[in-house]
Each structure stands twice: as structure tokens, then as C-alpha cells.
Length: 219
Image 1 (tube, rainbow, N blue to C red):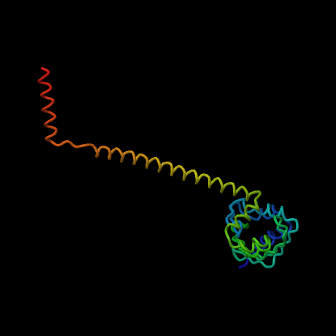
Image 2: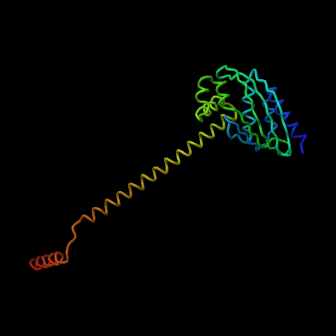
Image 3: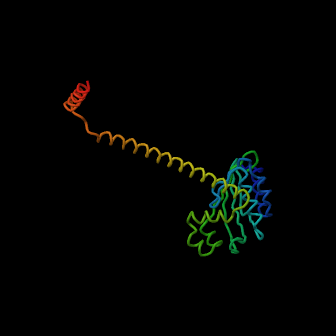
């Protein structure tokens, strides 16, 4: 059964998109919303709204056409086409996107957009996009170029996480080196001890006899 409220929510979301109203788009998400697409693969909380604010704030000639949309229960879908100039290269882009939604409390709780990233990269980046559009390296580069607002905050969090992980690795490596040095030192001591001559019982007896003779002479 269709949910009129959710269908209207989809309409409102894309109307705000077409009006370049990032705040209006952000208001359509729940506080713990999740978003993903081929470039921004895992945004959470206020990050989806921050991403839309950043994108709409930079798109001077953006137009958005909501081609079709549906809502059924707590699920929905939409197909939309965006036309704009990619500001980093000045190249025109037409992006045909299919979105899927999960709704909660009259807002968008989960949002996933899918499009042909290779086709998008070819339009936005030209030859480099044509050659590298399938590589994770290019997707990371596009995220860095997009930058700004909540997306850059997320990048900062990721970089801090990488630094903490690297620090932990260095600490573990240091502990391993220290343990290895201790083991080598103990092994060396064992080898030195094992290399010392072992006196036989007869040799020990001769030493005792010599000590007794020296003591008798002294008396």
C-alpha cells in the first residue's frame, strides 16, 4: 500500500535539490540517517545533509528532474537526472541516478544512490575519467576534490583513525623488537654458559687435593 506521506517526502526532497536548498534536503533525513553512492560510500548522521549543502552550494547551474518515484510502506525509490557543470574541470555533466530509500518517522533513514561512475567520470574528467573511471584511486580523488563541510570532517576523522591505527602498529612493532632483543640476550647467555668447560668428577677431586696440600704447607 502506498504511503502518501513518504511519496510527498520524496517530492519535497528533490524539489529542494532542484532549488539548491541544501538545508531543505538535510531536513528530510533522520538524525541517524545513512547515505551511500559510488563516491560517498558511507555517510552517517548529519553527514548526508552536510554533503548536499556542499554540493548545492557549489553548483551554479544545477538542474534536477525527478523522472519517477514510488513509495510503498517504509520503502521508496526514485529516478532523477541532474545536469550541471563540474566545477573542478568546467565540463558539463548529465547524471542519471536511481535512488532507494527506507523511511522512519516520516523522514529518510537510509538513502542509496546508484549511477554509472565510469560514465560520470568520462563526462566530468575527460580522458583521465575514461581511463581510470573504474579504479578506487579515482573515486578517492573525487572525494578529496569534493571536500568541504561535513564531508571534509569525515575525511579528518578517517585520517585521525588511520594515524591512531598506525601508532598502534608502531607500538606493537616496538614491543616485538624489545621482546626479540630480550630473547636474543637470554639465548646468548645460555650459549655462553653451555660453552664453559664442564669439570669431571676426577678433576674436581684433584682440585680438592691440591687445596688441602696448600693448606697443610701453610700450617
